[in-house]
Image (cartoon, rainbow, N blue to C red; front, side, top):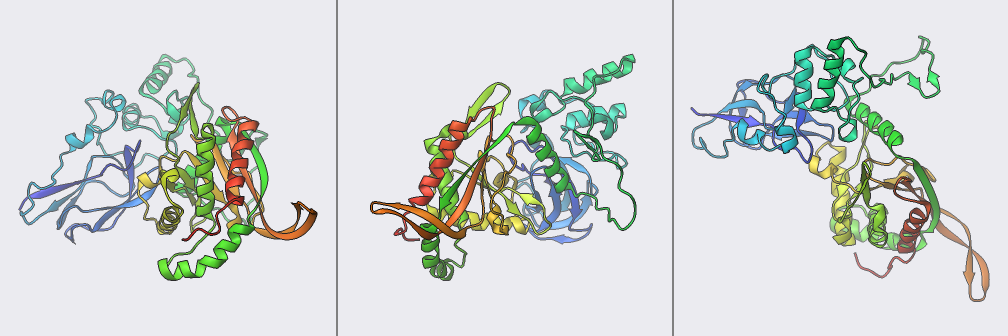
Length: 432
């Protein structure tokens, strides 16, 4: 019977490898088409890989915990023969997919798809397969690799970085190392060790380590500034109260405030496009599409940010459907890498947990993140043609934190004012 090689498929933009976290099948198991084979994890998302054909699993190429490049064969199935040549993909064809900058650096030996040594510890910092292979040949530990200054994008270590480090290391001169920041160390100095006792030590899981690195990197990269405004949400609250039960009955979905805020953000971005940017060195990249990332809290207290792509082109109903779908699948670990990549600006709803306001950290390489607090009824002074009056209104504090390298206070304030304007002038007569 013919064999079918199952490969790690393309997992989204810039993702070139994944960690095989769990095998879902054993040798000899009968596999149905589209049945999950393994669970994998990348620096963007955890997901499952399904079998493109039916057959019998006869060989596992990698063990759990292995780092596997995109395009590598990780399992071999014995098929019935009816699909001998259908969709059969060889490793070299898929391996040619990475960018030319990576492909041009591939060494002849050892092969790119060589399995990492089991005894080697993992690092939260990203290293390309090429850099990993060089480090493996030279016997570098990840702890030592973490001290190498990176000149690539997002502080990544390039081939030239590691070769220069090795040259200085072999010559006996002291390499210019990047100081590794230990968990117990802060800018104020080392923190005294925790005294043993009733304390419980909890090891960070992989996602929490990635989040921690991402947050520290953002604060070290961007000078953060936050502006606040108060928005009258009374019209929107009344509209939602009027429509939420009928919407739930018709669509079997909840009608929340998050999609309405996302729509307002997209509209304000179109008015002030210079907040929809990212920075590369001394260049500002102005993004044409408005892709709004929304922070979703997971049951294990971690965080993930699925993206509403092209939010400026979607109707409110379209945004509502997408927000509900992405949030639901995020909580059950069913997102794919493309759904959490490509964001150009972000939103976090702090009000879901009763928080009044907050100053979130920018999701790099974006330049701004919007935060909304809880909606509270409070007395407000209302200006009218016959004088001022006091009325009970549903008020919410909204903030925008922006990268002061490229967004100044004036632009940040105008952008925030635009969001407030679109929320306060929300059309309460629109159907849903």
